[in-house]
Image (cartoon, rainbow, N blue to C red; front, side):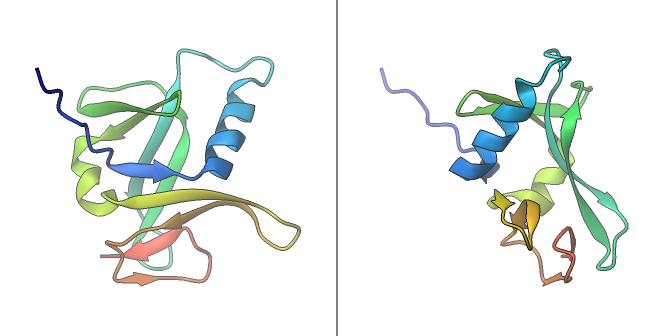
Length: 115
């Protein structure tokens, strides 16, 4: 019997996975929450990325990336499919970065894009 391979809507680099798991092991972390990856209106280019821990809601798709439970509103896949999330730990640029093949335009802040 063949098993279907699930294609994940987004990917996380090894650095992003390590940082997310570090945050999940912080004292007081609410283990009932999952990593929400999404978008919202706003930002200098029209849309802003959402990345944070949240509770699952109706209309969310669930998936797992190397032990990290993730949720995404199904309607956000149109904007995010194929995106890679990375973690930059350097002195000059520290934080999560987004490499989105669907973005027609991005801005200097790295968290805003247009489609």
